[in-house]
Figure 1 (cartoon, one colour):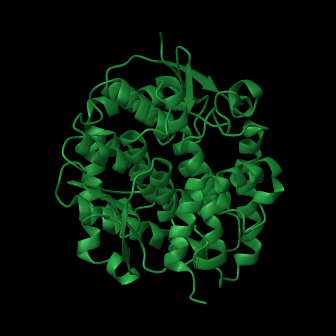
Figure 2 (figure 1 turned 30 degrees about the vertical axis):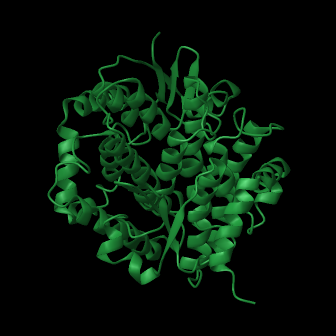
Length: 214
Length: 214
């Protein structure tokens, strides 16, 4: 059986690695699983063939034998349950690592994604400039707490886990706005994530698809 | 060992059951586990004792013996792994049910929560009225797809699962805006969730805390 994931035919970020297939590539690299990629255009994402696998018409998806799933968090979790390396075996540390997976996607990412709304989706609206600081304050509310919890630890709860993989990926989306660098320990945490060989391979793989040809 | 969760001392919704402890109560009722509740004031949520359990200073939390976790999705998932009744045993249906858990919290809930931003948090801003239809369109983008996928099925993927528990809970937060009722099959799906005895018990338990005294 071969694992097949989907990714943008051309990512809107031009290869910065912020599209969600990078998270799945990273997880697969951490556990040493080879995978195929099927590239999907924006038009094809809304066609019945893709909607059959991803009901919301997005990427990434994950197919392996008879299983087809969508939703980045679920895919990363599935990979983490199928292969060693992304979740602790002991029940309590495992539950805490899973907690950080949900916290990354559900508590930290939503305010960060609002940057896309205020800057791009509603970027031409008359209120965009005045809303931006409000959006940033809501991000800081979360990062203040996250920074306090992380302190000078290397990872969120003991060894690197799928919780860190998702949290680093989420925080990366706040970097361009300058907010991440307001928190030196979070910026260093993200840098530790990016320095992992598995991340490097995942980033290079998405870049090979998305980088503008020189 | 006794399971102890936290909930608002007084929920901002006045007992409509939209606070996230209701989701955890519902999961515990589905699997037949008794639990204690520790009520927390808004001030106490930001104190060190609570932040030690919930680094973002929110509710609910879940404590059982030596384990202390936070984040509703993680708590519901933990309950579902400890007790039968919320996730299929077979690996593929189980992975699909978990997919719906993440989809509820990560793809469907964020645009719905934006209703709170536009109506309440930024309700006094001059752009609120003009932004509201944009926010509603982003919700409809998701519910169009969800409605198409659900069709006339009873639940999202076979038997009722933790994925349905979270999706119904998320959709409930769109009802007051009128959007849910634009989708008769989703409204009926939510009604099926609310009709479950476990939901009824969970709702009554939170209402007993939050209902204004007559």
